[in-house]
Image 1 (cartoon, helix red, strand yellow):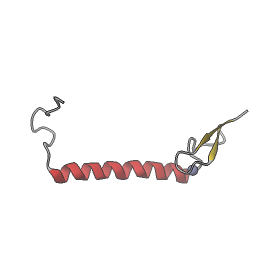
Image 2 (image 1 turned 120 degrees about the vertical axis):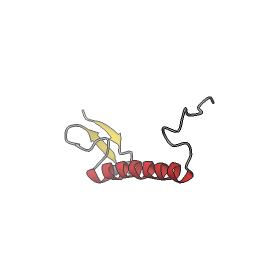
Image 3 (image 1 turned 180 degrees about the vertical axis):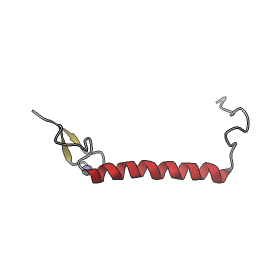
Length: 66
Ligand SMILES: [Zn+2]
């Protein structure tokens, strides 16, 4: 009996078995889409902190008292 999960990207049912090499994604495409989301998100965050010029690493102890 194969367990089925929903693809995190498109919601399609994916059989949780060796026959689904891209699980939990339904296909390589959905896996790429998900990874692309992460990459672009990180890129945006990095670009933002760079543009803001807030305490770059090595500028002293980070004020994280809160
Ligand atoms: Zn999918």
